[in-house]
Image (cartoon, rainbow, N blue to C red; front, side, top):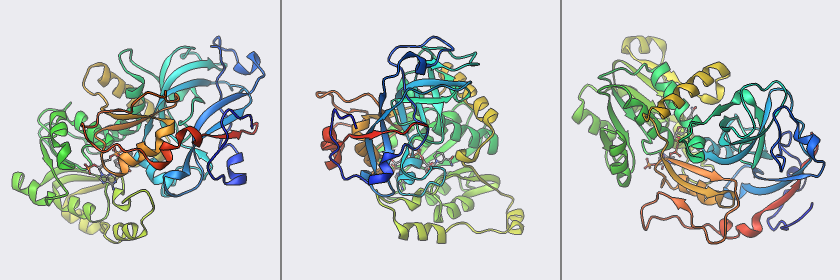
Length: 425
Ligand SMILES: NC(=O)c1ccc[n+]([C@@H]2O[C@H](COP(=O)([O-])OP(=O)(O)OC[C@H]3O[C@@H](n4cnc5c(N)ncnc54)[C@H](OP(=O)(O)O)[C@@H]3O)[C@@H](O)[C@H]2O)c1
């Protein structure tokens, strides 16, 4: 350990001593295309990373400083200095041990980010040092520097901020593929979007607006209705105080053409019942399992027990389609790349724009996760690798007076950084 700051939190001995993946690192000076940063210097690098150290509550995600040797870029790889990362609902699930795509702890979390290329490996033709890129990965993005395949990077439009870049991939690819590849949304259709003020909800609403005369019913807390209505939700519904099925039937007695269901359990049954003939229900989450920072076995059992159960004969007689979508299981990289390039084009045309709810430095990750668990966010919550300056306030779109309280853990953030010596790969 080479400590500027001594670890103050309880350590889980052996586990935290191991890096979760080949250690990425950045060179201090920009490299020429084709050069390896390892050749430049031999001195070890340190890299701040948010590491899941075990399953459970907020305290399981810790800010660590990994000390590591300079990486050797393989052919086709680039080294990116990360400027902003997305926080996804899947990471809340992952922290609770409910996201099967996340490798076992200790693991650096993070599926998406944006940054600047600092070095490129051999055979990288279409990326160069200094390019601003978005990058997507199964895990490992919540750190200052990452080594990724150049194929997993996407050049950012000039006018796009790093925060917007980090907010785009997971939410917009998910929304785009569900709406245009699965549900085939067309002019005149009606759709129910749950969690309409969340990252995917806002992305789906914006994408619906690219098609003429689509009626959007969106469920969200009442305080968020004005914002989501401005964003394109035709009929915001407060699911906390009203029965959304009744509310929709008052306006559309026949129901809707498409339901996007990230909730699961009894809401999937309601969604299926709301479909018009030839309608499509897409199940893409089980947020009803999550009620707070810790795993809730009762909520999980209830969601599982109430899930939609169908046989194919009943489905045929209903004239309805039921689909499932999970971005983590899409292994066709060409499909993802094609979708990303379409989304970047829509951004350039001004048709989509990620709504950033708030930005938190790595030290404040607890506050960021709490904001989502406590259902305060409208749009995307972003994590910033850059250390927080003493006087800086949280960057947030929160309404004045809204609760963005500091947690006990984040109040101790100055001491909360742990030092970990990463092993050589
Ligand atoms: N299958 C896939 O590939 C895929 C990809 C991305 C996301 N997803 C799923 O899509 C859903 C939305 O993700 P997101 O990133 O858009 O979420 P998000 O931005 O974190 O949305 C959070 C908002 O959703 C509402 N909400 C409803 N139930 C909630 C709950 N149990 N816990 C916390 N918030 C809840 C809250 O607002 P209100 O209370 O005001 O409504 C909250 O502010 C999640 O279920 C996620 O797992 C699936």
